[in-house]
Length: 305
Ligand code: C5P
Image (cartoon, rainbow, N blue to C red; front, side):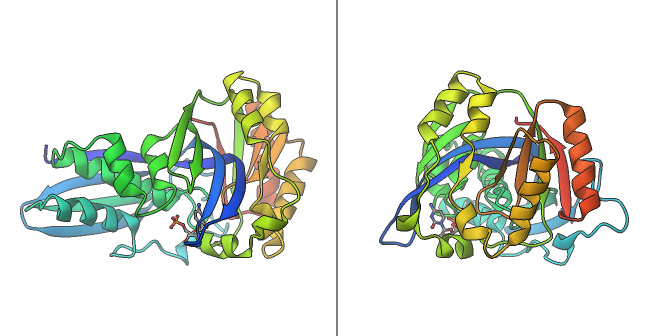
């Protein structure tokens, strides 16, 4: 094989609880993860000469409602690196060094997933690269073997290698697959600010949390295909850390509630907010209103995948 293409899907968190802070600074979490139909695209082409080449492109096709003229695209001012700072590069390097791959690879990354958004875009690109390099050079690593390597690059990478719906525990690497979440329509809105994950975790006072989301109940509701049960258990303790510093997250949540969303929550460490609707019409109308209100730089009407 001398070339292949892979999609890297974004995720949202239906539930995110923090249990304690570990001595190494990471937090023990319990998270319900769900991939959504927003994806980056990666292509991998073998080069006869050694080394990694990475090219990052922005896609402006019909996936977002907000690529129209005049609407801010803040992440163009916050470009994704195309060197060793990109997890894609580090993932390719990790496997190619370990397996002493003599050839090189040219990787093209087409970005659609919002950046520094709480949607695991970087981790998902990283996971797609681990899968891609494994396949391209016939390394023969199993999912578990890729996950053991991926967790060194990011806590969400093992989940992104798996995809779908899953409970993630530990720092994110202990995974229990779940059935797909009940069918629904989602609006995903990313405010015009990037939020670094370490910053939000640093603000979190895990011992002072008064409310913990019902993660076990969320898993049971998913297993029962009970959308109302899912909606009533949406919860993310990182909101307590992010909203005081990024009030736009709270404003977006309020706006979605006023627009009749059945459920609304910040994803991951934010600032992306997602809202659940039972019909596509309601979702599209709400997305248009949020766009008009100027609370988001990128808005997607999407679905779980
Ligand atoms: O592993 P990753 O690079 O994605 O994590 C980014 C940062 O998020 C970590 O450096 C840490 O500050 C925080 N984090 C955490 N507990 C986790 C996952 C991430 O404190 N389980």
